[in-house]
Amino acid sequence: MRQKLLILLLITSYSISVFSQTQQKFYYDSEWKGTSKNNAEFYRVFKTNENGDPVGEVKDYFISGELQSRIDGASYIDKYDDSKSIFIGFSKGYFKSGNKEFEILHDKNGQVLTHKIWYENGNLRYDATYKDGDYNGLFKTYYENGNKAREIEYSSGVLDGTWLDYYETGKLYRKFVFKNGVLTDKFFIECDEFGKCQKVFYESFANDENINDWQLVESEKDYKSSILPEKGLLMETKTENGFRQTINIPLSLTEDFSIETIIDFKSGEKNNGHGLIWGFKDWDNYYYFYISANGYYLIGGKTEGINIEIVEWTESNTINQDYQRNQVKILRVKDKMYFSINGSLVHSEEFYGFRGNYIGFSILSGKKSVLFENLIVKQDLESSLVADNNTNSDFGDWKGNGTGFFISKDGYIATNYHVIAESSEIEIEFIRNGQKQNYKAKVIQSDKFNDLAILKVDDMSFSPFSTIPYNFKTSITDVGSNVFALGFPMALTVMGTEIKFTDGKISSKTGFQGDISTYQMTTPIQPGNSGGPLFDFDGNLIGVNSAKIRADVADNVSYAIKSSYLKNLIDVLPTTLDLPNDKSIMNTTLTEKIKIISDYVVLIRIK
Image (cartoon, rainbow, N blue to C red):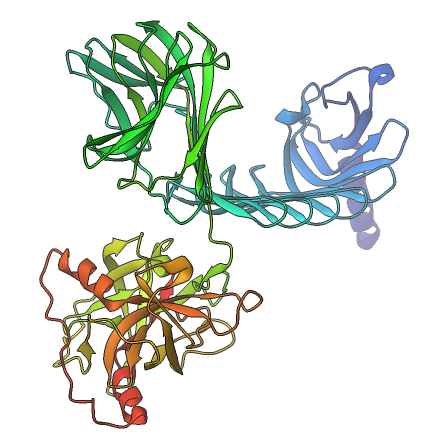
């Protein structure tokens, strides 16, 4: 009897639990707003308890009856606006065909942790992870053919890492690198569908934060400049003298480039010039392309204070007169310069090299107010010159590696600029007294133009060397001289972290396209060799290994920056270094030289 009573009580309890739940059915339109059955695109079926709270699984259906989604659970469901509903666990959505459409994982508070979306053909369309409602980690989108469209690195909603855009063919379109939400360089990379790439500077004056450090003039009596968010840089002058606003944008004289802006004349004297200025070093060295509001243009410059008038004031019907906007652009292609206004070519000229890296805007003279809406600078990348920074490696948390070498007893190290250009953290590794040593390092000085950088060990436990056993040679090495390189090629991928030796000959005293700062040599180098030392067979340092020509372009062609250019960088350090001048290894065998010098060559890892 007692057993029957227990069973009866259990059945009664179960029945109360079941009958206290109520099945609900809500109808939604195509935007998931509550609506009537007659206007619905979807309907939802779920159960609620005696308090009206959702209980158990939630199912959504197309109005035609096919399953649209299954949701593990919900803490709140809004009948009128589904965006206010709070779901828990997985939400898995489906096309009418039954193929998976999306998958979302929510935490216990309804916050999204992961979100994936698929195309109906089964290929992934969207893949993101979140933290506290913000993007965190990798955000990826894909084309319907399966190729990646975009990949962005976030840290708690802030851009922090690489942003990559791709064409539908899978080829790279754009590359940006961010640190804490800010671009790490003035330039980003932009490529066409045939693989030709340019570095691009784009100033849109989107806000008043002045992220590119324009030297704005706010308190001068006769001059004023200010950023008008989403409009441009406004320059105003109340004097007949010239007025410029420029920023440092380094360009290579060996590669093609373009500079352009949109000019909006606001008020003042119409028969005086305003426009682009580039190659500015000082008022004795610069070039300009001016237009006037009454329909004329002027092209010229100065070199060592000597006026160079390329085109005198010339009337042109391509100029929008008075208060209309005008696009002004210069384009360098090989040995020619092209000048255009509103897309129409107005002049071409031989290319003249310039001496400064400042680019921007100028008012030649006259009391006026001019708005410059943007500044776009593009330069071709050296497509056949392959920099050897192994940036695509995935070796633990380290993203790339290069090589460096000690240039002083107290821990100063030379390497290439491109090895450390995008680094947030640097670690070096070398052998000392037969033991592997690892230290943090920091950048002390860099020379982007000559691709050089000087680091210093950033660790109090580092003990200075008693000597650096090689000689720092700055005189030119002859063609035909035997040379050897030491380095760590592909150390984070296939070749390992043991130092590698290669040798060859100096084949030219000038490098790529006649560059006088580098040697051309036959010494084989690979990705990761960058920044390593180049020695002659007497043990003299003669260069810093930097790049090579791709094998499909030319065989056995590599380059090293001459040691004299490294000496120039060392000379501008805030402290004086005693450079190595030890010739004791000169008469040893090559094998012995390699053993001795190798202990002073370092593997550089970057994050």
